Length: 129
Picture 1: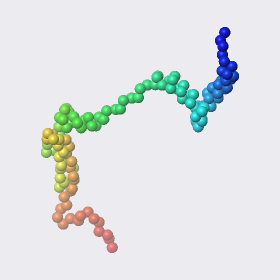
Picture 2: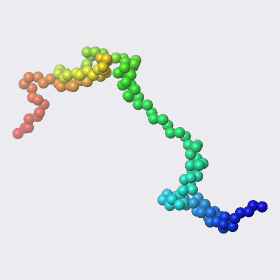
Picture 3: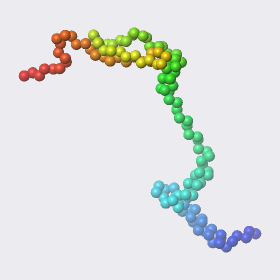
Picture 4: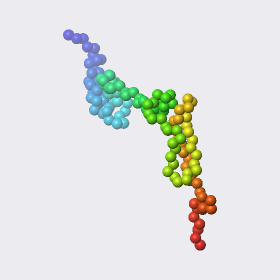
């Protein structure tokens, strides 16, 4: 037969009582650490190896698209030169072209400023008296 020391036999009921208490109350929010640690250890031992790996970060598609356009690898329609269209009648605004180091046109920015005919009011209303 097994020779179990008397100290172990005396501590066994206390260990069983502690295990039941930790299982019943250790999972509650705000449980003290002395009740919580067995569940934390069990969670790591039993379940951590089965958790799915975190998803890798998603690629930055906007940055990839911009770099492809700068390097001339994109197969999209190039911006037509000298084709700035402003829907404002008699627009006197300026157009600025943004280009890569190689000279490829990336974007055209138009700053719209409608021209004001001579003698016309500048758009401010006069207060009536």
